[in-house]
Length: 76
Image (spheres, helix red, strand yellow):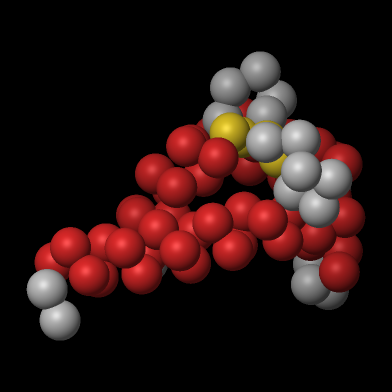
């Protein structure tokens, strides 16, 4: 598999994952999106933990599609 093919697959996976969080299609993930998604996954995180995740991943309490894609590269 070529590097560009692998990158394209990662981009598609990141898009699909982002859409699971951004169910209202705002173009960003906010606190409520993260809280809801984590709860659906069975993760019982505190408000502080959720806010820390947003602070580390995004700006102004939101994670944009581009910021999410950058994170995806590092965790994949």
